[in-house]
Length: 193
View 1 (cartoon, rainbow, N blue to C red):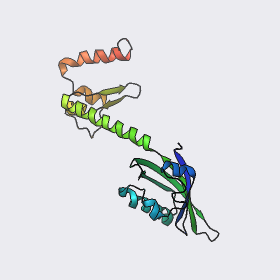
View 2 (cartoon, rainbow, N blue to C red):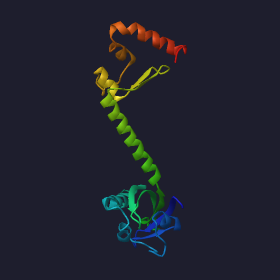
View 3 (tube, helix red, strand yellow):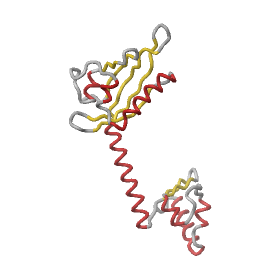
View 4 (cartoon, one colour):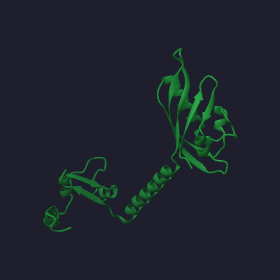
């Protein structure tokens, strides 16, 4: 199944022309509607995205700028697909916008993966907060320290301010500082991992 297809809209007649691949992505056939209008297209759009799609088209034409819109459609069997649509305006001989042409890409898989990643990250942050554990990394070459939000919480440092190696050392109890500095030195020398 194709994941992308080409389309164009006759701006004078407000009629769209879709490649067979667009019909396939939308889970339709060319026989379903040979040249859908915006009103007919709106019937397969997720209700929450109808106005966004209309506004993107209007803004593109009014501002003579590239068209880009991400939206959802609902297939015949009720499945939701995420679509990225990009296009550009073509002008007639009088210099007026006459056609909006572009491509759509089915980005459902990418959106699902991103949603799953976000869910895992939320769970990780929740787990860290509940268990009071944190993670960090140190880039010795660029002298850059990266902390998780919980690390800032444990050290009671302001997370809105960048953390420096010196600031980190200031948060270490004096009785533990020599031990820590020795461990860091060994790590830098690759004698201990």
